[in-house]
Image (cartoon, rainbow, N blue to C red):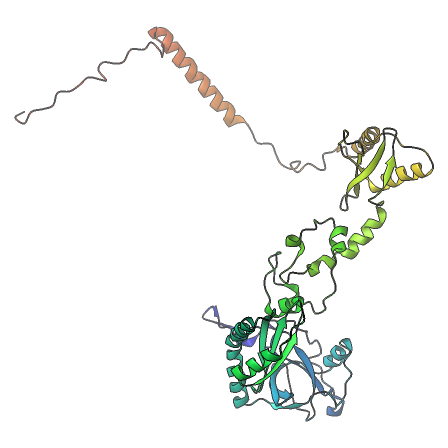
Length: 414
């Protein structure tokens, strides 16, 4: 279901100007598809009296519909806050809220904050006016914190719907004593101040951005839980430990390093240890690198004079190690690699040319090329015969006097 406010007008998109907060369809940030929207309880008493309300960015909370108001997704409502009231949009209602509360481990109870009413025009005007102040307020807050000398960064500012309180989200690597900062903010902005520290990953999810893959950040679109990412995930995937390549917009390791980690761990079970030492007739060999996709292990001698690398399948290397465990050294890497290549080449022969990409194409005729060669040879023979009859060559040919004859300029009377 697309947003009705973003429909087109004269072939151009109008845009609802809600920056993804319209909560009426696919343009919402971190949306949940309500597949039970068309189903309702036959009795009003059995309806689930809780709704999910979305505020600025990705903040969502559950509220108790004490008056059983007929709410649908996208309605602007006034909810209970401390102090005063806040304005938000309904992002989910009905039976699907029950499963969402169970997923987030929130128990349904009357102690949850309540829904007051549907927002009237005055509530919406005050709410929009507060939203327009937030950006300038964030810039002023950064300036004040810099003048005091605090090592912190104000990432975002969120006004309460009635304008009585402002929440400042900040990031810092050290503990910050912001008692003086709160006094400065209270005198500058004339409202109640609340400071809330967030992590660098939460900051990236709030602000959004484009990753190195060219797509929007996962944390700002669909990722809701932030798992710890370690450098061992990059080592298992044979990636270089370069902070500039494996770090995201937040400065931490990319969350996508965990996506394929389980597949790599399953594939590495068939590989030998990377710190292996293979006893050969020519000396000891060690593992240089492994190729997970081709299931190959590259071996080389410990002797620095023998710097050639040899590739073998992982199961073959396991057999070599089993021979060493039995007390029998294997052949040299050159002999083993030659035997391996001979066996592989015998199976890779393409007798009927199935691997040829041009087997269904007809070869192009070279008739035109031959014709050009014939005409060139004929013209060459004619020129050589003419030179023989004239008795001259290109080097000794005399210039034609008629061709270079000078003409006298005509006079005016002629």
